[in-house]
Image (cartoon, rainbow, N blue to C red):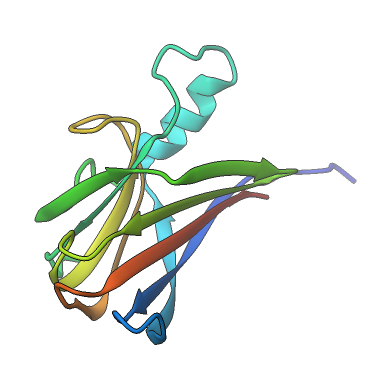
Length: 147
C-alpha cells in the first residue's frame, strides 16, 4: 500500500469586541482561506526567507467571498502590526489589537500580510458584519495550522 500525504494549511480566527467598560460585547469564531499567494509563500519559506515574515493584519468592509486567487482585501479599512506572532509545533498564532478609534465601522473581512502596505497575503476571510464602535477595542486572534 502506498502512503500518501496531504499537507493542508488551515486557519481560523476569533474576534473580540470589547466595550469601554472592559466587558466583551461580542465574540465570533471564523474559518479562513489560506490563499494561493499564502500557499506559495509557505513553500518558498522552505528554501528562502527573502520575502520576510508575516507582520500585519488588516480589516475591511467588502463582503465579497474569499477566493483562492485573492491577493488583497476587497476594501481594506486599516492595517496594523501584530501584537504577537508565536509558533508551537505546527500552529502559528497571530494577535492584533485595534484600539478605540482604529478600525471603526461595520467590518466584514480580514487578512494577514507581510507588509505595512501591499505585501503578500497569507490568509483572507469574509464574515457577517462585526460592528466596532469608536470607543470599542477589538482583538483578533488568528491561528494557522499546517496539517
